[in-house]
Image 1: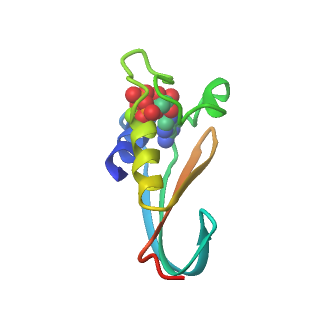
Image 2: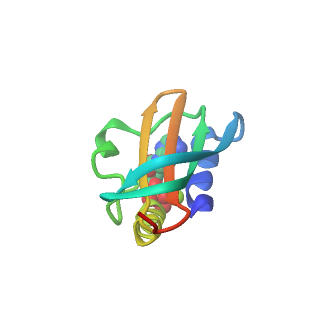
Length: 110
Ligand SMILES: Nc1ncnc2c1ncn2[C@@H]1O[C@H](COP(=O)(O)OP(=O)(O)O)[C@@H](O)[C@H]1O
Ligand SMILES: [Mg+2]
C-alpha cells in the first residue's frame, strides 16, 4: 500500500527530488464513523510535478493514469487496502508539492 504511493512519488520526481515519509500517532480520531483511541497517521510527501488537474477528481478510480506506461491500479489498490482496514486516504497536490495522508486505526475499540 505504502509502496504504491511511494512509487508514484518517485515517478513524479523524474530522478531528482525529495520524498518525506512522516509517521505520527493520532489520538481520538473518527474514521468511517468509528471513533478510535489511537490511529497511525502516515504522510508521503514529494516535491515532484504534482498530480495533473484533469485526473485529480478520479485518481482513485481504476485505470486512471497520467503516465503512458501506467496501469492506473496503484492508488485503487492502496485505497481498497486502507478502506478494508477501516482507514482513510486523501491527498493535496500542486506543482512542487504532493502529500498523501493515510490514517489507519490501531484497533476497533470504540
Ligand atoms: N505523487 C504523485 N505526483 C504526481 N502525480 C501522481 C502522484 N501520485 C499519483 N499521481 C498520478 O496519479 C496517476 C494514478 O496513479 P496510480 O493509481 O498509481 O496508477 P499508475 O501509477 O499506474 O499510473 C499516476 O499516473 C499519476 O499521474
Ligand atoms: Mg502507480
